[in-house]
Image 1 (tube, rainbow, N blue to C red):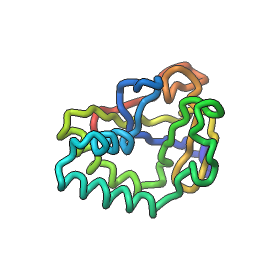
Image 2 (tube, rainbow, N blue to C red; image 1 turned 120 degrees about the horizontal axis):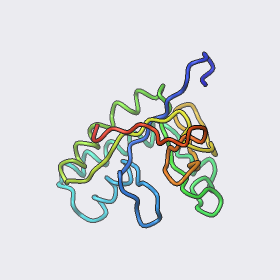
Image 3 (cartoon, rainbow, N blue to C red; image 1 turned 135 degrees about the vertical axis):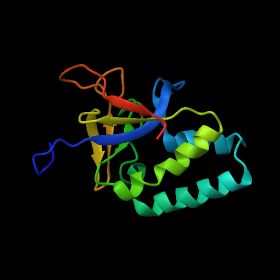
Image 4 (cartoon, helix red, strand yellow; image 1 turned 45 degrees about the horizontal axis):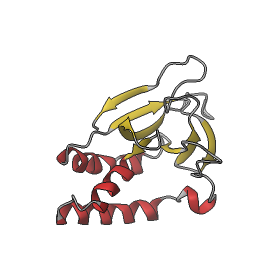
Length: 151
């Protein structure tokens, strides 16, 4: 529950498929992988660089605050989720989703009130270790959280 008594619904954009580590790569990781493998056009790469710079300036990188936050030994499967109040961050994600769609890379929006054990928190995001085998599994009901394809 949030401080106003409302249930907080965290938001994450991620692949619907597990990666080689058994986790779900987030939207930024998916786009950065396309860049690393040379699949982006010059315009797409310019978009990625400009928007990645904007995001880097807009909110903290949890790993600079806590270097162990994404350490698989300490926090297995740790993943970042936007707080619903981070609308200024969430509203830029559709550009990334469009880029992924242009390359046939699936990405879904996942919303959860209990995505996992919080290991980091700031004004706009949380980093959690998922409760169960599914990122976003509700520990009380055991049900998966809702998800939407694409944007």
